[in-house]
Image (cartoon, rainbow, N blue to C red):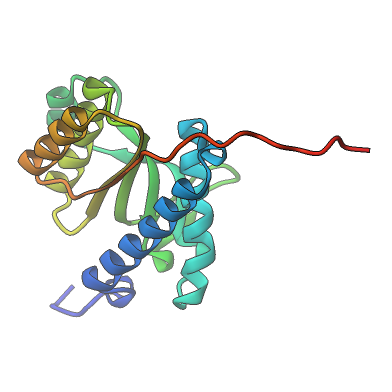
Length: 195
């Protein structure tokens, strides 16, 4: 490459992407604090965060085709063994790729260069599952040190001890954790009868 910067390398700086992800995570947490009925499942939470990113990317001059749900990360066999996984790839809830690197290979296949990988979880209680996802993110970062990773967790009245244990675990693995915990009171659902 002769020391020349690839076009995708100048797309967005690590600091700017970090600021954007943090900003979008705060929007997610605000939506969640507003009404817990909007995020009854983990899939709801992931969809809300994706929608926030989908809306904010163009506002920052970034194309939405950089965002991909269930992005498969192809890891070296040594990392797959370390994770106790078979196969060649592990999916992440959300992958952000360099948009200039997207190449369509066939009708259903494509490839791109990964820029960031994110896992979005509902609750801090499932320690083993979250630990496996943190290990996956750490493996991605070991494989590609330039790829940024984040774990985003929104708890629903999660015990303080569970949240604290996950924070310590994420820190020990070197994975940035953005988290919140809903403690609001349940609201009585009042809905007029539809005519």
